[in-house]
Image 1: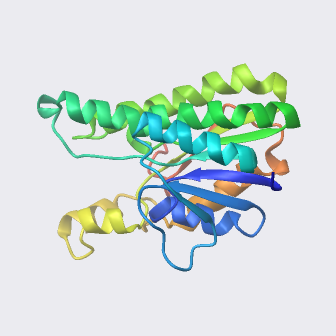
Image 2: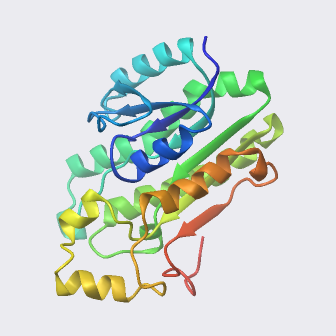
Length: 239
């Protein structure tokens, strides 16, 4: 079994890739994703569809036999802009499977190693959308679920010295965001203009906070959520 490692789901692009890149300075990083990462990725890549229950369980069992994961970042997720009246069973099932169930499977897989080590760090990827966002019925619900899992796991696992926290990004400049929000669009300019800091966040803005939450510096912090949104959530009722 190799040295202690950190498992990051959905780390081939966007926020996940930023997290994997920053963590690679300090940890052996394993990226679970369906898509291949960029050629300059510094993480060990393992291809798996995290929405596939059986495939995910088999993959995690094999990985946990090779690595001792004492840190976990539940980052993978999907989002669809669909009016509430048009949300169907297929979208609901896919979203729950990827946005929620995968996180539980990963925690269950790494928990024995964390318990044996008497140490663990878990970071769940939430979203500012959990506070409410139009056309995001399923996404906001599942991200709210990630926040709830964080609180419950924090209470359940604190006695094992396992800390569980979450981050909730706002608008982050990723390929996915740019694809849905062209920079030259008046709507995009209006969105960015509503951010108090007057700019989009970067994947590294999120990665820096995740790195802190995984470190010894956050040893007395559990069950918390950090909004990384340039001030957009200020004044909102959080949790």
